[in-house]
Length: 416
Image (tube, rainbow, N blue to C red; front, side):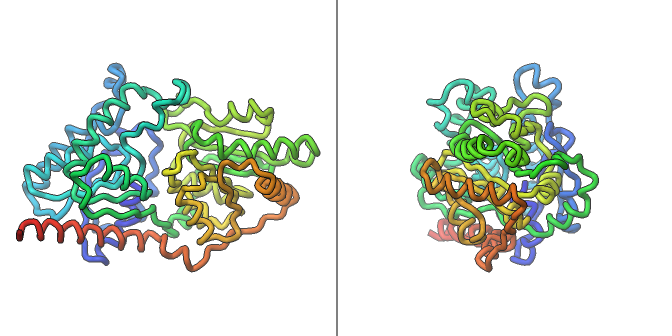
């Protein structure tokens, strides 16, 4: 949703009229944020569909919003395509099973479709991981994804992804789409959101201590992030041993780390803190918080921390709100992640390290940064003109250029 929402204000400017089909938010177990609608232009038609009640489907072990809403998407979009001529369908969601409908609608109505791969759909990443490190219901989701992904991908007419490796892997896996238009487009930075968050910050539950120097990360957790978090907490532990009274003022927050319904998430960061003996200075909140609650919390922090996955294909879409906040920033990513170059180009004052981050220079750099923060020295992050190319407007322009490429390719095929 995030990519589409921040693109809607610009699609018309670039010559595209957009209509949105989405699940009614009342069917989602995740926190809702009605402030998101403030940035959607009034002229945009939004069609909402129902989903099966999770209360009943969960008894069968079926909680996926995509699967619960699949029939309703099918019925609603069928009606729309019968009534109106559309040039293209755009699937931009991490509820990937919905994308299989693209192949059906293409066959029935002759309409091309583009899939936005914001995360990997089918992945072998967790196959060699211990059971406790795998996502919930992994046995089922792995097999479902392996079955559904080829149905959707083999017939796609265009690909957008946040990582170039996603596109490479998919085109290698499915030779049928090797020649289709594709582009790597990260999520765009959307500055108007910050103003909305600040305007409404008092309506959100405060999550941070008033008696500490708060270093905040908001986003998913997972054992795959331990390699990025461990070196920071290890350096912090050594500083605590040197002067607990001073460095005990620092408190690390990891917020919204689980995709499970509220109250059902399992901590994945706190166990690492407990292993290192610094749990008294680490707070993990597994419950997800709304998007604007996230932005408000980032603004209330003294400093920010972004931890990346050990997966080199991982690109954290969250980096743009962090950079827009202009707060002091510490980031640790896999050296092959595109986030490293983006942050270094756009915010030279940010402290960026890559994993493995166990060399003396990295440890010294992290230690110096934490020492500066505990003494009240917060160097704000300023973005460079280079950052403009990562704006939501530029991201939208790249999307519509790909859409045009898809239509051109289809026209060329017809003329042969």
